Image (tube, rainbow, N blue to C red; front, side, top):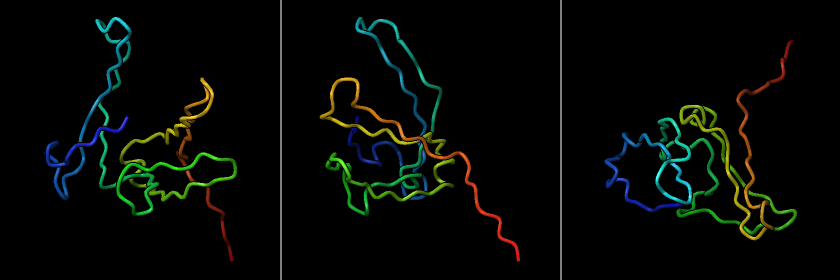
Length: 115
């Protein structure tokens, strides 16, 4: 879900863009919560992954076989935001196949180079 809101309405400013939030879900009766996340934090000025390619707005891509999505990855920001990955939504897939979770690596293996 994307809910557009001005950063200033959330009390965010340049250099102070991190905010805390939590998510609560309710069942069909809307009386008692079904699940609740712990407090989380995010800094939209320092994303761990970025699909925008410098274009403003919500990114949307054609979902066709063989297509690719360019992504910028910043490991430091990914860990600072405690992000676990990316949720891809395939709007026109069959029921049960709309959501795909792509986990980001928690570690990075580099080759050892010796002289």
